[in-house]
Amino acid sequence: MRTHHRLRLTAALVILAHTVHQAKATGGAALSVETRQAVCGLAEDLATFPAYVATQMKNALQAEASVSADELKLQIYIQQHSQSDGPKYIPLQAALAEKAQSNLDKLMTHTEKAIDATAAVANLQGRLAETMEMMAGLHQNSDPGTGAGCPARDASNVYTGRDKLTNCGATTKSAAQKEPNPPSKINQQGFPQLSTTPGTTGTAAGTAQCHLTHTQANNGPTGTTRTADGATLAAGYIKLADNDAGWTLEDLRQLNTGHSSGKPKPFTDAHTNSQGTPAAFQQLPLATNH
Image 1 (cartoon, rainbow, N blue to C red):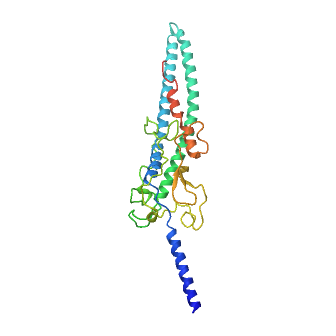
Image 2 (tube, rainbow, N blue to C red; image 1 turned 45 degrees about the vertical axis):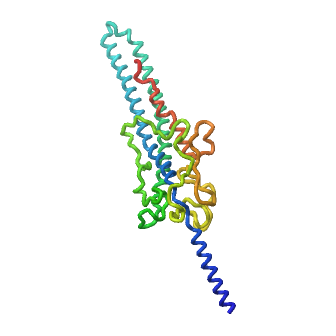
Image 3 (cartoon, rainbow, N blue to C red; image 1 turned 180 degrees about the horizontal axis):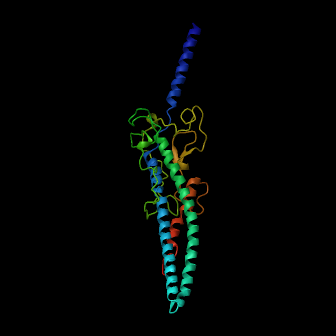
């Protein structure tokens, strides 16, 4: 009789343990609408940077071509009027030639910096976009969006595929397109519009069951083991809680001198390389007052 009771007790404990495990392993909440908008908004904004840099470079090249054309015209004039007033313009021709060479040297230097800046910005843009697309692709099979998933689309729905995620930096504006304005979400200070508040709009853990926003054992992405501390998403902007659910957001609003130490490298690289480089093309003394 005791053996029978022991077997029943053991079976009950196994069932209870399994039930507790199942109840516990819910994963985390969907990435909030606010956080998703912050990441996607920046990625989409950075997608215009190559076109902006290309526009500034083209303007500088056109101005340099104008200086060279003026120098050639003056040289022809001097040759055609060598017996009259042509020789008196020789000093001006020399000055134009010197100016053209100086501007060309500066243009080459700025072009190298612009290429580095474009690469750094593109790296950040790509990492942000890929994070969000990856999360959008993790959702409940054959579900309209009201079930499990990772990034929140609105207060009660999640994304059901990366194809549903729009305006999130997936497409870079072609360098062939004119873009006179620089990205608005990165400036000399940092990334001023990146919020440090995670937001709360979205699907709760019980429904979302997103194992990317939880780091406890059985709830996180590493199965029955606890996820290592310091895990991040979106190039380091989203900082997952250690051994817990939820996340905080890295403060990236001030990355200027003395404030970038310890900040995510993709952000500091993009910020450091991008500031001043495109604008430098506008400051070149090309095709002015000659």
